[in-house]
Length: 144
Image: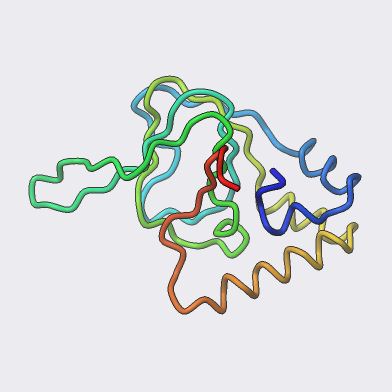
């Protein structure tokens, strides 16, 4: 989680509260964790399984796998803070287990934790001021 820009400089107690707020979700093979056009409302940490970032681009609507996200990958690390619309589908390739953190819970904790409020507000402003929308918002486990 320390690879997330707004998370890494939070106090240890705030980090612990956020981690404690995460809920485990299980999704079955072939189901979609997220669909193109959905609003990003949660941050996801992949605990097990594989999620394919899929799009279609031709008349036959054949799927094209853009990326495979596996254990340790983080999805929607910034886009969920501004309820951004997703540009592709995220399909479960086998049974998938994730930890999910909702924007609603983050907003509730921001009322009690000034460090969280400051870092999240800064990230919201950064995302909203970008010239181009976030097309793909994920972090690989081995990214530095």
